[in-house]
Image 1 (cartoon, one colour):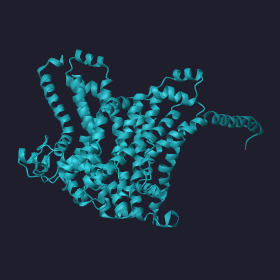
Image 2 (cartoon, rainbow over the protein chains, first blue to last red):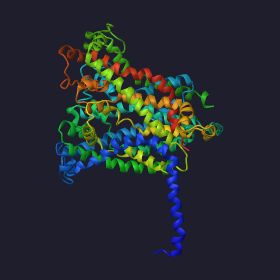
Image 3 (cartoon, each protein chain N blue to C red):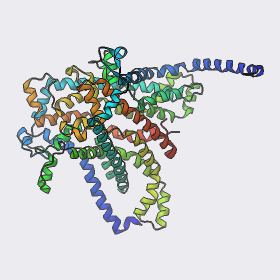
Length: 319
Length: 292
C-alpha cells in the first residue's frame, strides 16, 4: 500500500512523463514516418510468415487454411527424428557445414598473412582483384561452370587428371564422398578472398613500431608474424569464429541445390534442400515447415549465444 | 634485416608464385567457359577446348540471341533489378537516415533496431513465406520478387552506421540556416555518403541480378522467369518440362557451347560492374564496421 505522501509525490511525476511522451511524438513523428515503409515491409514479409509457423503443428491443407486445418501437435517433429532419411539429412548438414566453417576460417587467415608478405602494391592489388571476384558470382553461374568442368565425360578437370597423372576419371558430382569434397572446396574457393578483407584491414592496422622493436630484438620474419601480426588479428578472428556458430545448420542451399542430383542425396542432401523437396515437390507443407522451424529455432539460439560471446570477447556490436 | 636473408628471398619468390597461381585459379573456370562459348560445336564436343577458343565462331551467341525465351528472361531480369534496387534503396535511405539521428527525444530508436535485427535472426522460412505470397495474390507478379527483398537489414545498418559518422556540426549548421529534415537529408547526408551509397546500390543490383530462387517458386508462369531462374532451370538443371520451348531451341539449349554462352552472358553484368564494385566495397565494409 502506498502512503498518501508517496502518491502525492509520485503523481506529478507521472503527469510529467506523459506530457513528455506526447511532446516526444510531436517532435519525432517525421522520423517515424521515414521508417514507416521499412516497418510495413518487415511486418508483412518477415513477421506475418512467423505467425504462419503454426502450420508446423497442423496438417495444413491450402483449401482449409490456418483456421480449419487439423491440429496434430508435435507429430511432424516426431516424424523428423523417426525416419532414417531425415536423420541422415541432419548429419549431412552438420558434416558439410562444420568442414566449411573450419576450412573457411583457416584458409583466409593463412592467405592474408602470405599476401602481407607481398611488398609491391601493384601485384598485391592485382591478386586481390582476382580473388574477390568469385564471391559476386551466383551459384547458378558457378554451378553451371562446375558441372561442365567436373564432368566425367571430358570435363577439364578430369582431362587434366587423366593426362597429367594418369588417373581414372573421377565421378565428382555422382559419388557421395567426392560430392562433399567438391562442396567444401568450391565454397572455400568462392569465399576465401572476400573473407580476407577483414583480416587484411586488421593487418594494415598493426603499429609499425612493433615490427621495428621486434627487428631490434633479432626476431625473424616468421617470429614477427607469430608474435606481432597474429596477436593483433586475434580479436577479429575470435569474432568471426564465434559468429560462424550461427551457421552450423546452414550448409549452403544455393550451392548444393545447383550441384546435387539424386545420386548423392544420401550424403549431400541437407536440411534446406530437404525442406524444399518436401514442400515444393511432395506438397508436404506442414512437415516441411516443422523441419524448417526446427532449424530456425536451433540457429536462433546459436546466433544469440554467438553474438553475446562476440560482444564479450571481441567487443563486437551489431549496431 | 630479414628482407636480405637468403631464406626470406627464397620464401618470397615461392610465395609470389603460389599467390599468383592461386589468384589465376579464381578466374580460370570463367575463362574456360568463355573459351568454350566461342568454340566450334565439334571442338567442344570433342573436348579439346582448354583456355583458348578452338575454331572460333560466334554461332553460340547467335543461337542464344535468337532464342526468344532467353531474351524475355534477360529483359525481365533488367526490369526486376532496376525496380527492386530503386525501391530497396529508397526504403533503407529513409529508414537509415531516421535511425541515425541522435535525437534524445527519439526514444523508440532502440525498439526499431531490435525489431529490424530480429528479422535477420529468425524467419518463418520457405513454406509460410510462400503461402503469404500466394494469399496476397502476388504469384506471377514482379512484386513477389521486389517487395520481400526491399528491406535489407544488413544494408540498412551499414548505411545507418555511415550516416552516424557524419559530423554533427554539419547538421547543426544546416539547422541554423533553417534547413528541415528532408533538406538536411538531400543536401548533407546523401552527397557526403556517395561512396557508401554507391557500394550499397551495387550490392543491391548484384543481389537482384543473381537472385534465382524467388523466381523459381513465385513464378508459375515460366515466361516471367528472370534470367538467373531461367539459367538455373534450363541451362544448369536442363529441366525443359515446365517450359514451352520449340524443339529447335531445345536442341540448341543442350549444346555445350550454347550453354557456355548463356552462362557467360548471365555473369557479364557482374563482371562489368565489378571494377566499380571493388573500388568501393573494401572501403564500404571497413567503414560500416567502425562503430562509435
